[in-house]
Length: 342
Ligand SMILES: Nc1ncnc2c1ncn2[C@@H]1O[C@H](COP(=O)(O)OP(=O)(O)OP(=O)(O)O)[C@@H](O)[C@H]1O
Image 1 (cartoon, helix red, strand yellow):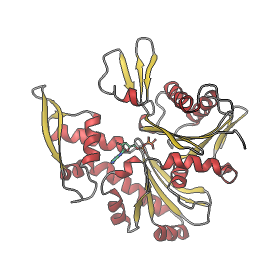
Image 2: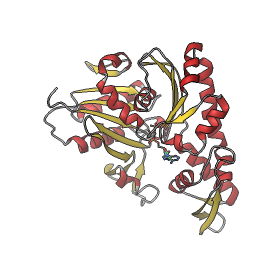
Image 3: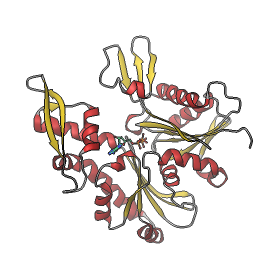
Image 4: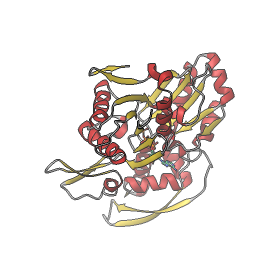
């Protein structure tokens, strides 16, 4: 319809992406909010707040309100969502947009309602919630409307969703509170245990992206990092290598692989046969960890591929869902007279 504006939001635990129909992804910012503890006032949201992580004086806290896939602080989450929607759409948009929000799986009904209400307050004419595996699969370009099984493994910052989809819906799925953050934490623990050096989250993420691997002998690189020596209390520089990161990441990686296997075990045989033909598709930033696709392939015997742009799949999927509202109606959650319909 002329003048309407459709907005898709990937409200992720690590990043928020906003998609506008006809324009594509227009915003991509970390899900971080900086708050003045004394006055409870929000000082910064997104990239600006992320730069403050781990670097704030006592009275300011920079937090991720949705860590680990739960909305730990939903007033702050609400403010963050409103801020991003208004940033892309303007405060007093003339035509009220329809908004499709993808939230981490496993959030409670209360949290879902909070997100729906926040989007309405931000000026939406209608808001829908879409489940993460569905949005990820749509964004990865998987044909899910057909009576044919497709499997998606979405590894975000806080959660991993493994799902088998067919006929536009989720047939089997499992969700884990494990994602890129747990990889970072495992690397922090490793450096502390092996070298007695404390590193920050950002350094751990740097190691993960630059040299880490999930596959034995998959990568052979080194990286110089800095941290604080726990014995002397002084800053120290050291060099870490890919082989040790694989050992450090073994536990969270094994849990993800187990989850994929467990979903495959519960998949009806016809759909399982389709998945063997079509392969497993991985989405989400966490799937970019080196060698994980190869490891899942080795452990399941099923070809495993990374989606074209894993970090954008969910946001692109929310956009596609807005185009297919009719056929997805039954799988979306929305607010009707203040009540959730699921
Ligand atoms: N090249 C890379 N290698 C490894 N990990 C990466 C890479 N790029 C991004 N990541 C990780 O991906 C994670 C963020 O992914 P993404 O933006 O898909 O999460 P999210 O959608 O916000 O989270 P969730 O799905 O849990 O709500 C972070 O942990 C980040 O460190």
